Image (cartoon, rainbow, N blue to C red; front, side, top):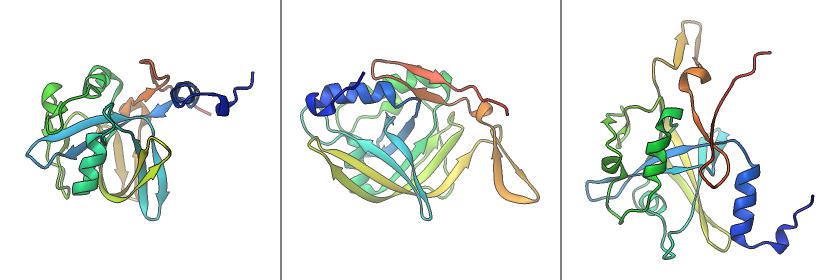
Length: 201
């Protein structure tokens, strides 16, 4: 079977891509509304980009009314954001935090999630997330006809829960347990999620 993308609508292409580029890690992103409220939203168009400087990427779309999604707008206006890696047991909260709210309202309150201070970060992190990246906007690149906002964030620091990472005296690099993180992964665009199983070789 060959599917010619030039013959498909953007919606058909999206559904084909999200069913075939799998599994995808999920970035659970906190950004600042600027009114004392924090936005929380999940993104599975998310990846590492470079390590020198340390940069990750998010692809953020538009709302149905054609305006920029809150995450895009907040990062564009205030630069700082925090990317968390959700656990498998967070799936219901991840889905709920994807529901559209009015700009300035907080999904964190909607989902009854607890925050924790994030040393060195102007924004807090989710207390239950085993990994959090403190990021600052590097650049936002509009892409395509949507457009999508390709957000590039420079990682300033990382929080690792002591239950998932160990530092040894002979190395500054933590040994991180994927099994302990138990990260939630995205499959197709219609609610499909997955968990990992490591293969020992």
